[in-house]
Amino acid sequence: MGILELDQVVMRGFIFGLIHVSILVIGYYSGWSINRLLKIASNGYVAGIIGAVIAHIFADLIAAALDPTMRSAALGIVLGGAIPLIGIPILEKYIIKSEKHIMVGDHEDIEKDLKSSHD
Image (tube, rainbow, N blue to C red; front, side, top):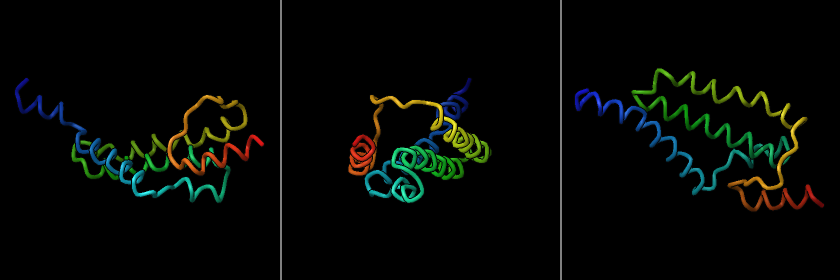
């Protein structure tokens, strides 16, 4: 394997990873949150789950579209990321959530949600 081929293997997806994580970091530090918008339609933790998934799907789409090595996979990445959303109603109905799980983001809202659901 030549140096050019090795570089292509190691760097494949580099732009994708850089852009994907940068979008999430910018969203976190800017305070922009899909979760807050979704709370209008659902309870806090479900909005958090759905918001996180949607944020990742958008970040994946943008990152894949901008990374020439991942561009051809953009649609598959988006569809693969969206399909697990179908399982959320089933999980909500049949799975008991652990009291020890960790939630990240929207700290004030999460604290309010936890207090209101346990009172």
